[in-house]
Image (cartoon, rainbow, N blue to C red):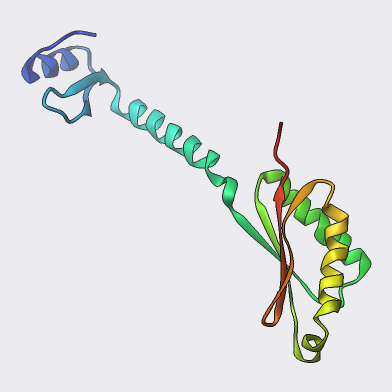
Length: 146
């Protein structure tokens, strides 16, 4: 910390050290720093990138399945769901009912419940299977860490 000085003195000091004068705050008395501007910008961008990386906890991922999905395919989809859950994302699993499938939505709810049984130990069921228009969906979320 060099204290309060005029702009001309600060620029001369930075020039003598072959560095840049970077203004940190824009108040009545501005705060400046003598450093390499490229390195300062790199560190600032890196810090902002880490902040945005930590904010991705509420991302909702979508998995779509069909009503007549096979048992092996359910296991494949459950692995994908668990991968999303481990990343910290919420997952919405949905079944789109087509044509005559919409007459008995209970079959879709049953299929969705089968899939949920594969993954329920590793995640929470945030919203149980719900039938809305031509779609049945459920939302799964990661378990809270202690």
